[in-house]
Length: 240
Image (cartoon, rainbow, N blue to C red; front, side):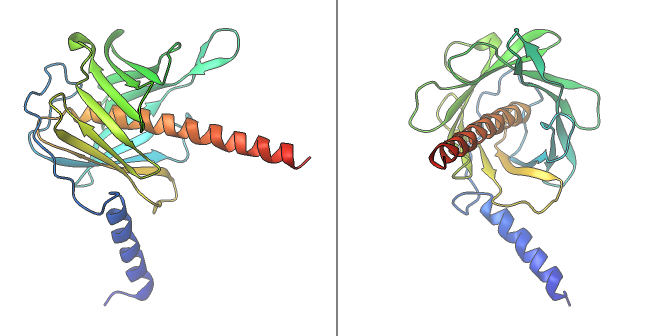
């Protein structure tokens, strides 16, 4: 027999899992028919789920752990020290995407210094191999992922949605939905800042989708911080 406190914990965990997807359903994803040969990691051979957790306490403040459905480590994202740029104290984000438990670096994800909207370049061994960019004009937040070697203006993956609604849907070039990211409504772990549930179809570069997810998270964090600052300043002004 499960004691009442434990029952509440299990119920809470079940609710968190359900609320990870904005519409309370398991997404129906289409197999990615044409996986890119430039994938950051071998494309999935079957539909897979991952849990992305942003650590609350880390030196960089931008560290993530990524586990598969079985709870096994899949990837790590490690934020390095901010990279100074120019004389005004402006700094750029730099994140390293690694295969969990190995020293192998899939890519270095670096904030572009000059761009009309949020943009990150993805490097491996000093070479830019991919780009992640936010659309300058769109009705809802929209992000695109390009492999540099096949960048013809049509992104390999496009994500649209909003973490305020706890969901992003990701589409391949042919318009089929191949992945989805759901933001967990509340956190069960004390050392976790945000948790995301990622689901990918067969033939998808999971590492690229993880990179896309953490860039979107960074962009939303910046937007939230900016909004909070503006609200504080407006409150201070009217309170004078």
